[in-house]
Length: 223
Image 1 (tube, rainbow, N blue to C red):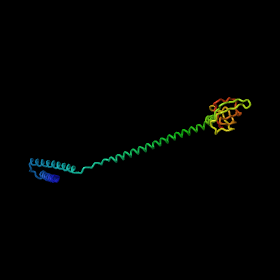
Image 2: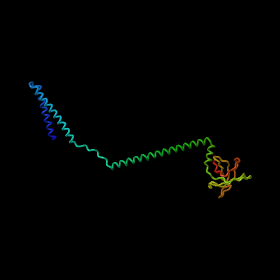
Image 3: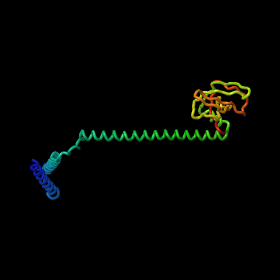
Image 4: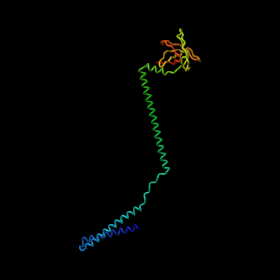
């Protein structure tokens, strides 16, 4: 069918060429040709040209139909889709873990900077006010014992008995201070230690004061 159309197209083209040449010859060399004959020939030429265009268009359509179809891209398999999802999940997990590490590091850095700033500020305060430093040391000193009784004695100025809370820190000769809030009211020297508690005598150097039951005993900090 395609070959026949090609042959017909070629024949139409030859006839069209022949008619065109004839028409040209008649127009240029045959002056006795009648107007009706010229009109008939021009009509045939127009019909042949139209037929040639029609055959050319049909030939192009047949060529397009005969061309092999373009194969569509193969669809991804279920296994490939699952593998891609796993890769995305792993990437997200790594990103989240990295973000968590960076957040924790930023938190530690901020706390360290805050602690360092606080330490520097405390050092500045201590340098500027030795009394404040000493009061802070008294307040942070370990609790060694508590006064259980104060016995007045005119000859020795009295003595105290106390409960021992940290036996490893108390022995005969240990000097303990009575702490109230962040100050030391007086100092006592341990004169006796037993399973029931300890006994201590006042040291000179402090003004007169009356120890009370429950007063806290600490190791006096050194300046």
